[in-house]
Amino acid sequence: MIISIAIFLIALVFIITERLDKAIVTVSGALLLVILGILEPEQAFHSIDFETIILLMGMMMIMDISRKSQIFNWLSTKLAELTKGNPFLIFLIFLLVTAFFSAFLDNVTTIIIVVPITIALTKGMSIDPKPYIIGEIMLSNIGGALTLVGDPPNILIGSAAKLSFNEFIVNLWMPILASIVAVIGILTIISWGKIKPIKKDFKKLLLSHILLKKIKFEFYGKPLKRSFIIKTLLILGLTVLGFILQKQLGLSVGIIALAGAMILLMATTKNVTLHETITKIEWPTLLFFMGLFIMATALEETGFLELVSSVITSATDDFTYMLLIILWSAGIISMFLDNIPFVAVMIPVITDMQINMPPEKAVLLWWALALGACLGGNGTIIGASANVVGTSLAEKENIHISFLGYMKTAFPLTLITLVFSSIYIIYRSNV
Image (cartoon, rainbow, N blue to C red; front, side, top):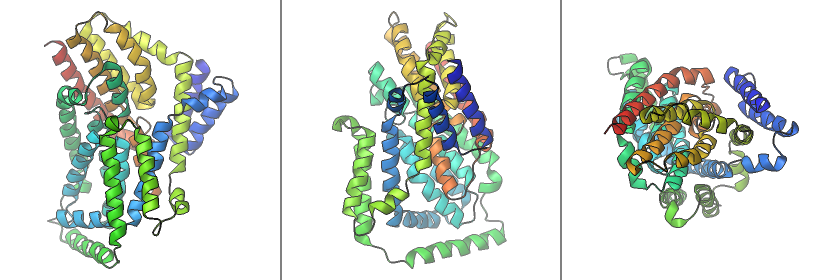
C-alpha cells in the first residue's frame, strides 16, 4: 500500500510540475507497479477501463471525419454571424450548450464536439480561448452530474441503487442548476477583461468585423461536398441517438461510438481513409488514461481505498454529518484520483449502511456520493476524463493550459459547487 501511494504521489508531482509529459508519467508509474510485483500483468491489463478508451477513440475518429466534412467550419461561421463577434455571447452560448448536451451525452463526447468548434471560432477572431475551454470543461462535468447517463459514476450508482433516469433529474436539478448559475457568473466576472463586448472599442470592433468577413470568405470560398456533409451529420446524429437509447439497445457507449466511427468510415471512404483518421487519434491521451487506471487499481487492490471508505463511514453516527463526509470526501478524492474506482469501492459500503434505514433517508447517501464524485472531478486537470481530453485538444492547437493554471480557476469554483451541494443535502436530510 505504501509503495502504491508513493508512486501515485510522485506521479502527481511530475504531472503538476509538468517536467515530463503526463502520458509518460502515468505509463511509467503503471509499469513500475508491475515490475515491483504490486500488480500482476494480468491485473494491470484488466484494470484498464477499455469502455472509456474505446469511447474516446471512437469519438476522436468521428470528430476528425466531421472536421474534414467542414461541418465545424460551417457551424463556426454561423455562430460568428449569430453573435456578431460578441465574445460574451459566444462565451455564454457555448457554456450553456455544453451543460445541456452533457446531461444527455457522455461529458467526454460533449467536450470532443464542443472544444474544437470553440478553438476554431475564438482563434479566428483573435480571442483568448482559455476561459472558454476551462468553462466548457467545468460545465460538462456539472451538466453530466444531472442524469443517469451524463457521467460514468452516475451509471454505476444508478445500477447499484436501482435509480431511474428521471429520479436523477428530479433529485439533483436544484444543486446542479445553482452550480451552473454560480460557475457561469463567477467565470464571467473573473474573465470579463477577455470576454467583454467590444462595441465601444472601435479598433477591436473594426478588427472583429474584418475577421468575421475573413472567416465567411474562407468558408464560402471552399466547395462544399453535400453528400459528405449529409452522411456525416446523419451518422453523427445516429451515434448520439445510440447514446440516449443505450439501455434499450443493450450496448455500451464505447461500442456505440466505435460502431459509429466504422460506419462513418465506410460511408465516406471516397473522402477519408482509415490511415489518415487513425493518425489523428490522441494516442498520448489514451495512454495517460491507461496508466492512470492501473495506478488507481493498485490503490484499490492494496486496500487503500477500502481503508479510506471505512474511515469515512466510522467517522460519525450523525446522519447529516455522514452525508457531508461522503459528499466532501468523494469530492476531494475525485480531484486527484479517477472517481470511478472510488465510487466502485463506496457502493458496497453504502449498500450495507442503508439496510436498516428508511428508503427516503437511504437514497440521500447515493445523492451525496454522486454529487461529490461528479462535481469534485472539476478541481484539477486529472480529476475527470473530460478535463484531460479538453486540455489535450487545446494542447494540440498550441493552447497550453497548465495543471496549476487550470486549478487556479477551477479549484475555488469546485469548492463553491460542493458548498451548494452541501446546503442541498443538509436541507434534504432535515425535511
